[in-house]
View: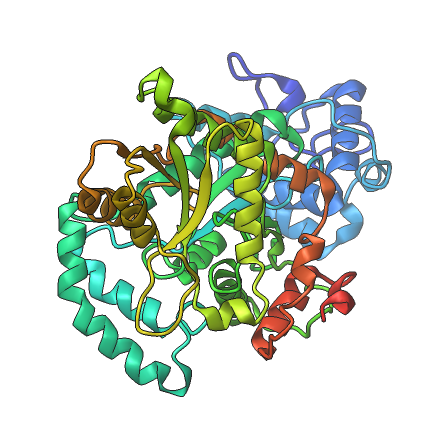
Length: 500
């Protein structure tokens, strides 16, 4: 260290904290002088980094140099040996003029490979990184996953309320339906494509967000399914492993992929997220501020009439209408199909039917109301009363009347899955038995739709709200304490009192 090595820059030979007030090196076998300019550079670096950081780097430097342990021990025994210029500089707040010795050599060591930077939560110049979590029902990726998927689905009283016997009837129904549903998934290729599309949509949205919202970048994509992998608890564990929470804080946005809110879909996913948040990060009283260092959550809980969503639906409908002879296009009936709900949920005051109808009306307004249309409902399960009219019954009714030019539009789904690929394509359309019965393409990888997702997320990030005002209002007939506490949690400290 006493002699200058070839190519060595003397202005970065010693880290901050190893010079005396005159610029002399305090450590090493020599007392090489670096000059007043170098001394000022290191003292100003100490001012920016803070005394603790400078001393930490100095200790690392000493430990890495042969023969420096004696000087290190002397200073640790007597803190008065710390240079006064460094002590003063640590409080000055002056920005650094040079790179640290350790940073320089760390860069040299990584020259043979490109290392992906870890997600960190100590950025002081931005609001990022931001976790973007897509929430959806999910679906089994293989036929072997079907029984577990159905068991979770029928165990969820928010989606399929079975009363006090839920824990008994749910597994029983799941086992009895498994062979039939396995065959259905086999018929559409061996599994649901919903995970593939969800991960793709989230990743592509995050790429756009990194460009249009650099202040909250980087945006990290996650998917949390309610009934299939990746489950909510799997997502949350990965979130923590990636550097969010556990004393590091960080922002996460729960972005529902159900455009229209329902307690049985978005509400159920938020209940699950809230449950695992409490288990993995500690429960806190509703309305109280989150402890420092935990993940800071906000929610995009509905977006039924967003212009980008409406445009994506409209373009897919127009593309399908273009396949009919021009003279017949205006008479083609548009049948908007959404997943049905038990009437017990509807009568409780669930907002889903109204929000689905709002989406339909917005799409028809974009299309100029040129075609006759109806809203119908699919996927009824069990003998209890569900919201109707059913899609399959509607199609058969019109075909029997001679109206055979029909376009099915899956208006509540953001990608293909068993409800579109099997129920609509292989059951409803096959039973209709007429080539005039067609289906509009699902949103899937539609770039207009993915841009809409980014626009929705950008608006949410800039607005700074924890959730929409609508989410603070429970259903008129809701008696669930879990729903109440979950809504208070996601509403945040300022809006928790509004949840009724």
